[in-house]
Picture 1 (tube, rainbow, N blue to C red):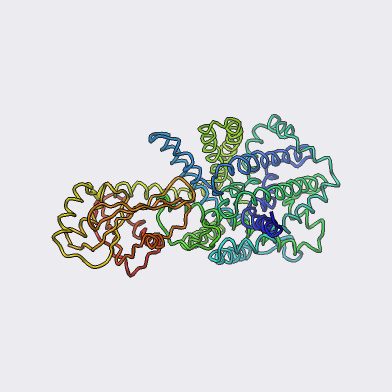
Picture 2: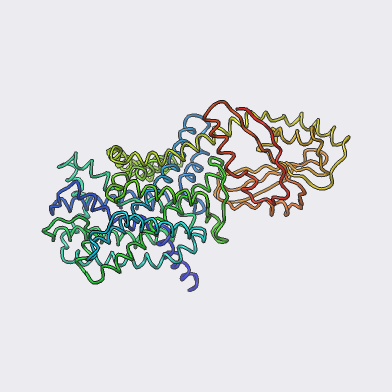
Length: 606
């Protein structure tokens, strides 16, 4: 490896700190503060809580995500959709296949719900640190909310620049953030080295045995230390596995130091502490507290970025695999094919984040709702990776996945206690994308069944007769179909009813494969002046159909596509019709020239 390559690799590690680790890197701001609401901070209890935090980071983040999950991507792509695509080839169509698909739907929805709460709690908790600045102790909460909303606006406004450019700016900031946390925590740790005994899991086990009921409640807040752990896998397509894993070593050490430093600070304090993170740094170097607060706010902005980029990546996978409506997608990098920006989703997320800020008003109240979506998504990841290792007969990793998956589910069950205290918002936020996915996928099936495609043999017989007897239009026409043996009705309507037959007619089929990347195409003759072209593309591919057509020397004059007007008496299918109307047609998704597109309308009742 040359010196230039080594430098580039190290720069990618720095970028991964900016793009991936913001969320989990800012969890020390509020995790201990929330736990203190349920436990008395005695020295023994603090060590036991630290043991719970340390082993949550080790088992859930290091083992389940950094080791097991990231090993399950062939070309560096990650996320729930990837796991489902890896698992489906092992399953026959049936109940198990449907269960896996359903888990995938729920996992995607939980991630989106989490991406709304994460920016809200991260930014708001940082801005609330203003209250420790002399003279600003009584800052109105409305002003705090407006500042947090302004920061969120700035964050979502820069998303169109691309994750690579954003991460380039954020990476060095996060290096500073993790270094400052490590130094601050390390200072207090040096003065109380006995707190390192919390690295032993025995203390965590003792806490569970001695206080089983309290321990079950506290688990719902301990999981906050691992929020953002799922980004290690979801964002692999943005940064690659190696930079993410190298970055995690640095991040893990920094997190252990800051959490254990907070524990040492609490043991040394004889007065009540509301937020050990801010009060620890305020006590350590009062004159540098304001710069530290500014750095904290910047870090929480980056934390939000981690989740937003993960949502873009997963939704793009969902769109290419046809389980989510198409939205206009911008590709923001020529190097990383999975770096995308979805403008409409971006601003919907922004509106939801600001709404959540004003609904909960305080980070402490937000923490009561936080964790349910994260632990649910982790549980689903645990189930899926366990099944994959089982089918691959990698029984050692399967055993580890069972352990970490069971622990994730335990955290998830504990978080159910949060539902009456605001946790229901996590379910509401996640239910919206889940409802869209279910309605869209089932509606597509109903629509396709209602269109009554024509048998290929009957179509070819009629086509041959029409092609020989009718006049042809000069040039080439493209038509789209899902499968070559069932011709969509709009094609026969165009050719036979409207008498529109070109000299050269090509039926194009785009098939998404179970692989992340890879594009292949082939042309097969169906009749005189009629070919079928099959394009097989990975579900993370930036597919340029126009370029593929040019490679095959196909210069289309007109592109026909089916444009259905859906009518129904049932409310659920009216919702489906509305979703179809507001989302761009799939031909727009592939960026065809608009002047060549002709939609063939047809009224369909479902």
